[in-house]
Length: 96
Image (cartoon, rainbow, N blue to C red; front, side, top):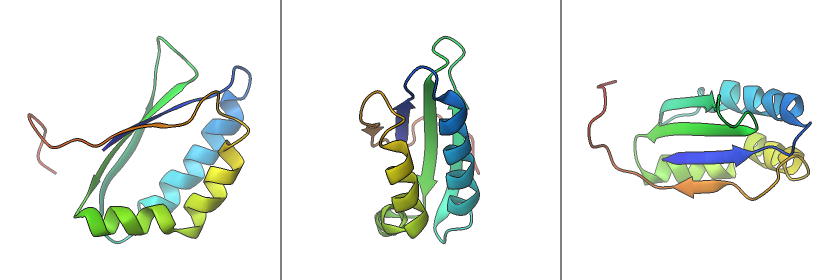
């Protein structure tokens, strides 16, 4: 799965802090195979998550985790638009 968050201009540092907490907690979750975030050099307010889960059940559990609810609440005032989430399937990817 790919998800992109776009911070409101000026809130990038706060968004980075929330994302760091999300990453630390999410990587500990059962079923999380990959949870990386990149920041666009072209659009500094844009953060893209690259996620891989063992199955849909693990992904569904992830969305219900308390730390995700806390992050969602924190990000609700820091983002310029709702997250763009794109379900994906592997095509030409590195093996984990």
